[in-house]
Length: 177
Picture 1 (cartoon, rainbow, N blue to C red):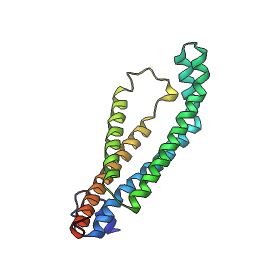
Picture 2: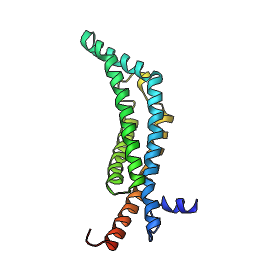
Picture 3: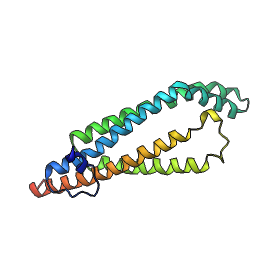
Picture 4: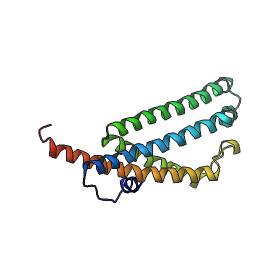
């Protein structure tokens, strides 16, 4: 357990190959956390979010029958896209666990930073937007999302550091490859 705590610490020194692999796999752990939170979001959306989404689209259509007719299709597409993103995220997490690299942590650092920015922006603008109550995220969900994103950010930074050290060790061992 102490080894994993050291591995996920983004400020811990990384000196050996096992430490570098463990630190690089911290990014895979962050992805697993994101997949779990994504599954929770999909279940929450399927539980009643699609009806609220459809209602908002119909309301915003202002009587246009074409838009109102597409509301159900668009809500279903949003759920499908969410499921697809969770699956892609899970695949990238498995790749990062099996063959740690620097690309995946960098990609997810950018995506998590974007998620943090949009979540903060959403919280700041919550009372400025005319969004039906059924579509608004509850404050506990927004706070939980921020906590999850911050934990993921720390783990992805540790993962990038570990993957970078692993690349340095590989270059030192095999200088011509």
